[in-house]
Length: 366
Image (cartoon, rainbow, N blue to C red):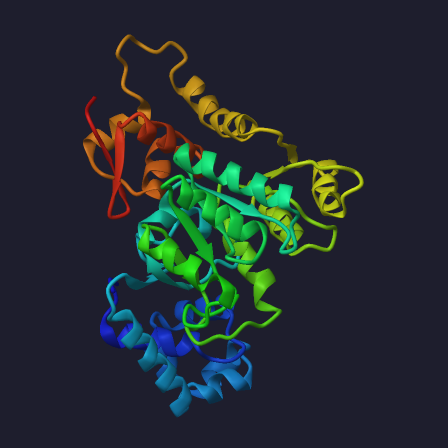
């Protein structure tokens, strides 16, 4: 467990987080009104009412059940490799912080620094065809080899094939759950979840640890999958698939959306064809994705250095030689959009010129 907050503030935040009807926006409203979760918990009910918070929220905060759930969460955080990443900490992923209802806290089992690395989301049908599963597996394998973290939702079908493809390439993968981390769902993927953590990946959830599967939580989870990623690749989806929700959220968040076309006779291709009609990039090979991401990176370089001097240092490397930076701080210092910084860091990492240590990027002399 690593957090920059005091034990009392951590416990108070966990209690707030377990309250009924308290979503990300209300959580932030409370913290900005009272400056800390501890102060919010001890504020009078009238103060909560004046902020427009429902009665169910303020009444539950002193209940033994809420205290007990917070206590169990603190206990869970004592185990190695299990931590809480909070939205006001430097380790919180910069891309995710940009979305309007970013989760105030994330439970992470595994390596939390992966959330700052360049990620590509892969989603699709739970009832995918054999060719769809093979495509997901091979794309994930190649993208993971190319240095991307593969992010998906641990569901049956395309999600599972994407996670497995990344593992088979000895790459990294992040699974964002629609349940608490102590209620792994579907049960059939318990072994896969274990493999993800054991092999350097991460399981992530914004929900209290004991949250069971609930239909309404899965679409909300999708905003985190797209929010963490540079782009979303939809492999196979029917028009009513939850993957289309992820793709639409990605487009709203300003992320790239890629879709793999299929046969006009296959119902699983209809959702992808719809996305392509709506402006998603049609993808037939991994190069189509890599080209699009490299395109992001080249534009600012051309503006910054129209006539590069022989042996000139990459603008980001110059900053990293001066001091280690988080990706967000680097974007700020360079004046580049964050997705372009992440794409450039991927290239530099593949060339062995940068390394990510404890959430900070460090330049290496060639």
